[in-house]
Image (cartoon, rainbow, N blue to C red; front, top):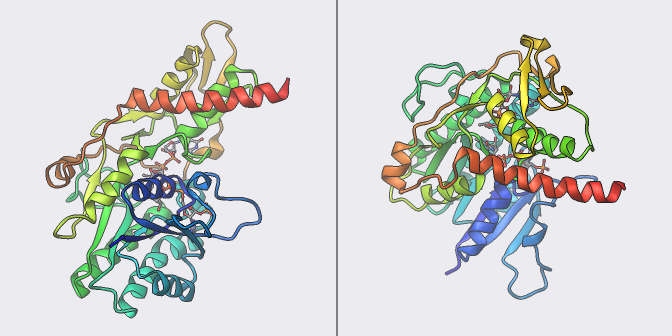
Length: 352
Ligand code: NDP
Ligand code: GDR
């Protein structure tokens, strides 16, 4: 029997990679996408076939995590074996500007899905994956962070995800649901949204290199993150739902780097060597050869409360799931730089 998966957040970075992965495994994949006034399916267009074609196993449904009746209808129609809840207002800085919406979509949205499974009598059939996050650790309590490290959220996003984490645990314990939290540390790729710091950097470095942009403005250069490759991480999501027993897992590389290191490497990959001068909001990254300022600080990107240091311990995932990351930090930067260079070259050709 073909397994059916329902993926919320299908139009996002992880939704695209996970859908591709599940289709390759032979699944029928149903994605929930929001109606938008412009096209929002760029990342999944290559997976989509005309629904009238016989072998089409990829289906899209309009829906929103803030709309319970819609979620209940989709789940009733699809009767999924597995649900991957990847939908979220996922930008930490934006969550300070839209805290109520973030709580609704990221926190209550998770509850709506779990309740839909329960109300429809699917608690014994449908396995549930919740996209939990290293942002739950927030203020540093222990390094490296593992499954037992106490949570201390530092943003409306993290607080909403804290609710989602615990309601997932509660439905597992209360109703015997196969529900898992993947506590994923930052994971990136050429499909990463352009306003997250890694993609913002690799895109800007390529555009500066080709003369399409003068400067890159950033916020806190000293934050440290455990950055992995998104393709590796969606594999871990699937593995969690293939176990005998539902559980929660940290997924990370076990290495941490600062935003500053990421900038240096991405610029160097574009042949731009940087030297730092000044301090705090006055700090700038100067091109060694020309003396031009290529990186500057804009305090608008500082967060009211910051997460200074994330470093995960993926030992449990390795031991139980047999999961390991395949991509190093420098390989990740390189593959993102390469993809953004190609994009920028296209843009450059069109502009001359
Ligand atoms: P993206 O921001 O790329 O994708 C988020 C997806 O959620 C998009 O498809 C978006 O739709 C959709 N979405 C947003 N709000 C709603 C809503 N109200 N109803 C339905 N869909 C909605 O995130 P990622 O792919 O990077 O991350 C996937 C999940 O994993 C998120 O929940 C994120 O919080 C979490 N996470 C991510 C990590 C990372 O490093 N990437 C690490 C740990 C957790 P649209 O395209 O229309 O905007
Ligand atoms: P994060 O990712 O907040 O960790 O959340 P992001 O890339 O936005 O920030 C990482 C760090 O970089 C610093 N920073 C900047 N960030 C952005 N976006 N833009 C800037 O200009 C900038 N300058 C410095 C930030 O202050 C921060 O310290 C991501 C999201 O995918 C979440 O959904 C997910 O849960 C976590 O990763 C794990």
